Length: 251
Image 1: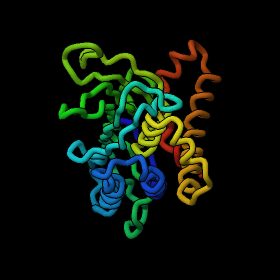
Image 2 (image 1 turned 90 degrees about the horizontal axis):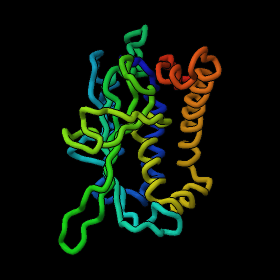
Image 3 (image 1 turned 90 degrees about the vertical axis):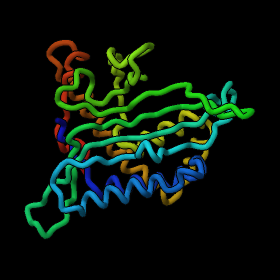
Image 4 (image 1 turned 180 degrees about the horizontal axis):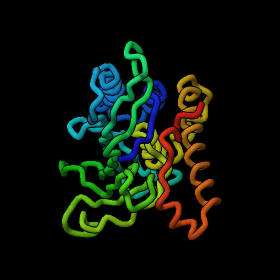
């Protein structure tokens, strides 16, 4: 399995900053979802267990955005009024420090790393909301046949299109953590308003920006290095490449 590592503090800061940034785009029923995500991660660090543990946005309590009234196109010209539902599941293990008295600073991604996004048509005239789209943004393991960071469309049903038995395409991806994917989805559904929202120099943006800049920069640099050093087909080499565990740990 992949042993990609993350700092607890980095992910906590990421969640805290997004929780404040995304407030206006978060459905009221999901106000506590991100804070709960952080609380669970604190619990894993302090649990005393060195075994694999499940962490994520639970299917029983998804993160819902507010309704986008056509905002997925510029000028709010989209045909549909939609909202997103997001859940995630990561299998992680805290990394024991040499001195047992010191709390772990890092955790490793040891198994599943998938964030599922569903886009729903708003309920109207007494009719229930209708699912219009679904995809998953994932981090692969050592046996993953596609790019280590990838996106898969549908793939949870036996019948098509995109049935479970045909797990292609694995589209190259750039985002890893659930908070980063939440921002991606919000920025897709609210094209104009999200850009305006994050344009100001606010304290929470100043916390969010360096984490995302460093992580995206590290991922893009790793991909560029793989391609530059490829001795065969660059695409084939990139598909097989696996990052070092400390990819996201640089200051």
